[in-house]
Image (cartoon, rainbow, N blue to C red; front, side, top):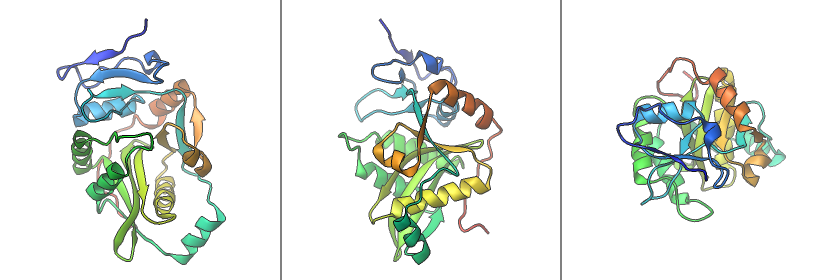
Amino acid sequence: MSTIHWLSADTAPDAFPDPQAALREPDGLLAAGGDLSPERLLAAYRKGIFPWYEEGQPILWWSPNPRTVLYVDGMHVSRSLRRTLRRRTFSVTMDESFADVMTACARRGDPHGGTWITRDMCTAFERLFELGHAHSVECWRNGTLAGGVYGLALGRVFFGESMFSRHSDASKIALYTLLEFLRARDFVFMDCQVASPHLTSLGAVRLPRRKFVAALAEHASGPLVPGRWRYPCE
């Protein structure tokens, strides 16, 4: 009978089991416990592992198979989105309202019920933002936050956590801008974690977990280069 690995707060931050040891049912569940310290989170993401749990549960760590990714040059841009881009209906910034973007994503909730963006997750990612590892893209309309996306950058990989939209195309504009920004900086892909019809329609593809972990070893293992992102670039 398969079991999951339990972590304590004293467990070394990088002491995760091999992602290939994750359960098949529920798909990708690998470990539980530990904490959401910056050191543990950075170590986990570099290994292809991420936290996903609801308020009141222990921290659950996952590495699903297959993994969903969106290559920086792989986004499907519809005709309607191209028209929106030409009209310049929205303005875009980066790292100006990280907490507001994360809060909006948390309020949007999980379509299957509940939300995995717990208060502790918000605190942990705000700390990563303060350290220059987490980033947000904000999409504005008439001075009001209309949509956005946030996540974590390691090496040449961006780990997308969540996005939200209050106006049609706002989150797509944020995502399009993010991918253009990443491509200009020699990033390779954005991790989208698990598939959804929406992500597939945008061009996301599935990779076997073994191939995904190997790609992380190649592209996300370089030295950390923390700092705030700015758009438009100065």
